[in-house]
Length: 359
Image 1 (cartoon, rainbow, N blue to C red):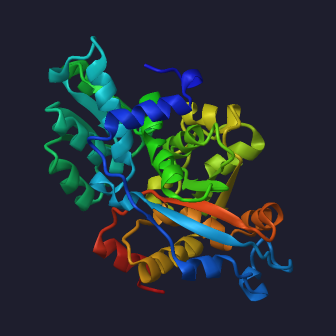
Image 2: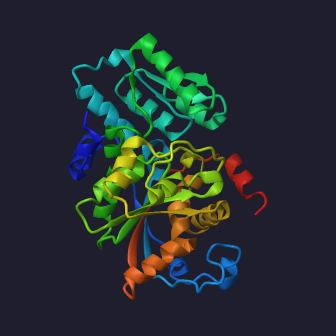
């Protein structure tokens, strides 16, 4: 297994070679309307009751390139890390496929690992909290996984996973705090950099446990492309941002943000890449209303299905004045070409109705 210290651009490139037969190269979309909106100053009224109230709105020039991982297998980027972890395990002489793999996840990683394991005829044991949504449970079961239900807290999920390991000898593949997962997730940015005809000034990704963000940072580590993380601010879900600017990783998060894929604290290995190695250039956060507004924009203008977690990067580009002022200052009259990673599209129609029922 690679150690976090040895993870590099080459790690992501090797991961991509290994998983190409199993994943989709997802498309990159653009929107003239969204570019115009992003390049138009917000109104002073829209900034009232925010931390930028009374300030002159910024006026950046942005050309946004959307990497659509909502079109990835299982509907999210998580397939990349899961397939990479499975393929690496298969190369290990110590791995017994008959013993299977195990993880704890209520969302996209559960589905991704189940699919990757099934593809190689490896048993998958998934620990899911009892509060997991029925659609995600059904999707995980559809890949022939064996589900064990647990309490909602991390200690309860980990204890259930450990019990399975003790009885089966299954190999643990965590959702984000693992070098093979991180290298796999970085392949989305690797593709994005090659798909856009002009060099990207920056890429912004959502940040939950930090696997996607740290993998993106590795993919960009030998280029001029800057990397930024985006999070919800609701109930302290912006742990990555708070930790980044305080210099200390936040180890616990208790938030019910609508960006349900981003309710976890940044893991130790992602943190070592994001902060300790300084491979990420900044962290930004957005409100629940801003996430909804960005999500509505994507549905109505791009015509694609995204989950709330997927649009936090776009919401930062549209509404976070700290980010927009930075782009204005650094991009000047030329502006920036900005890559925005849509992390996934696993949201039910019923959940969508709830999100927008009062809008």
